Length: 439
Image 1 (cartoon, rainbow, N blue to C red):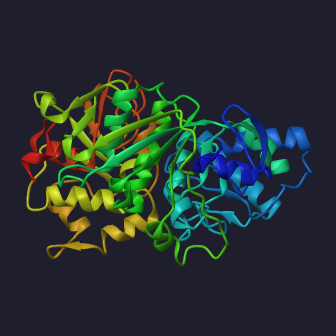
Image 2 (cartoon, rainbow, N blue to C red):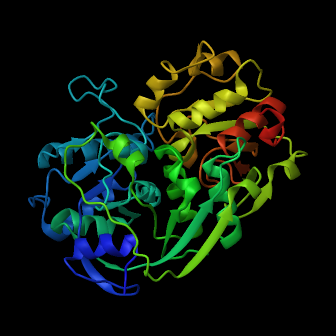
């Protein structure tokens, strides 16, 4: 019996010839990631179970990235970063991307930004490997053909000490996306369409494998968008088979050898779902669930208060290139926030030009706020002074990945999840808007 891509990766990590869905296996971990929200808890578990003087299993396989609650005066949030810094120093960890310069506490030029995009940009996402992270959107890295999933502090603390974790092999749901992507659609539309079809529980503890002509023609950043949001359907991980696009992205980012895996023709899938993307239209997820899908054109009577373009899902360079395409030469009618995911994306906003203007110039000329410092910012709300937090019950169109009550601040606020195209189009009208009006 053949195996799926995910099963092959797990089998490699478990030193087994074969694994099957439902089987419990111990896997060897290639990378453990944590950040300022869950890092202190993970460290606490590690020190309690292994002792305060214990050393981590591998100083080069732990990646710590402060990104969630960092630009804030909240002392408890700041203390979390202090704990990470002290631990990284004590353990002499190779990969701690600090927010401050340890000597003068100014913003560190090596600060990276949102963990999921920073992991990719710094070469920590490699085909065939196992990546665990204390954040549900760790599944973002599945775009590189690896097994990547979120875990809790207890599991992370155990990995920190042993480099191993016991997991159950997930069954794989296959999503075949065929056809040429219409000019007005983006990966965010596709994943919102899929989640709307299968529901937020439709892939619970299963792999969502994306394949087909449409996926093969996607950029790495658009592939990340697909995999990033599998958790919104309850998925254990998302995965896309590596190809030349993957290898080109990784070129110069990592010198570590890796092995690529592919699903066998006779692999057994839990289910198969086919889409012809040429038949799809721009969609949004209405409040208060990612599966509350509606066509953007059917929501055009919804008046909005703000637009937010950012996060690991919607704050990549490609997302801003797409937003700028809609906004250039026009004026927004509602406050519109531009929040790049990482420092590299921030720099791209001032380097990449469209029709003679940098992306930043396009956004500023259209009336958007100046690009903010890279971080998770309003995507997870957080401390009261977190950038972009909605303190009033407003209606927001957002390129983020969740629209639960209170996710961006006020529990009565309404968040419409949308693609960068739809978000930008909505900013121009002040209503939820189908981007085909501007394309």
